[in-house]
Length: 384
Image (tube, rainbow, N blue to C red; front, side, top):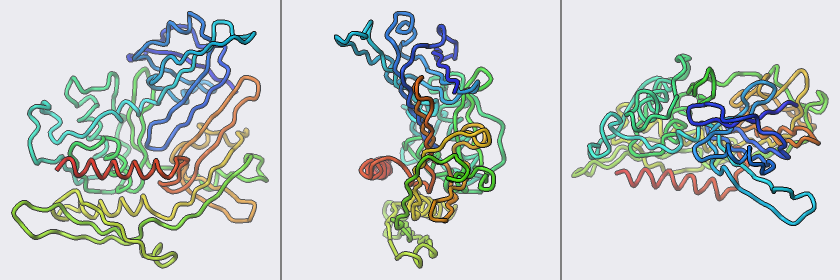
């Protein structure tokens, strides 16, 4: 295990010597969501001097950036009367760089000032999902955005040419929520912001199928423990209702169904407040498909893995990759890596845990998931 920690400013300029003397680190990277981490350090003056508002923390693992982004809590100081307290300790909480995009909402007319936003107008696109996601980022916070909305140093990677066509319609919604919806509708794409080549690079990618090469099992010696859970789907039929046209009693209704899940389990209907008046461009169909993808029967695997010379997180598999876990019962489960959680101390070394499963496979409490769903629905209502 070789871990190194640097502090940079928003322009990625290193602010001082690497942070040393750390006693614990806990970092979780997530698929299509901002990651988060915390590190505890001795509260020495040269360390505190770097922990300034607006600065970033860069975690380097074996020579490569593992997770980097803004410090959300740059200083959480503690001291007590213990014999070894010294100057105390400071805990730093930081997020990865995708968190900077999470603070934006979608403007219906991104090139116009906020005071000139048109009423009852939506930003719309029917295109390849990768192109849609790139445009959403570029126009709202990337190099193509208004100067006052640009994330410093953010550029777009060359297009990868991935994803299927999908319809997207949005107005004043959380930017990353719309990107996730387009990613699901376009075939389950991934997106990220990574520190590379002296800048921040946004990219869209198709998850790799590593089910033959990235395998976890007791026999291979790379599996410490696991907890597997298979749950019923929370929706097998998405009943989509188009937005009402002012002065008209007509309304478009679209039904999308996962007949396989319904026959294996049972029928579960869920109402979807659509993002468009009609399905002429496939927007209502896309809304229904996105819901079914989110609410599919979750296969959740919480695994504690061990890096081996043959299989190492970040090198041989990463977020979004499709991997295989062999359960002691003889059953094999193949699904996407949704998050990678790394904990480390100087004495005990690293522990790496991966959450593998459907889009709803998560370590979040059920109440958190419900609140996220309600927030998305309320945002849709408030922007009408």
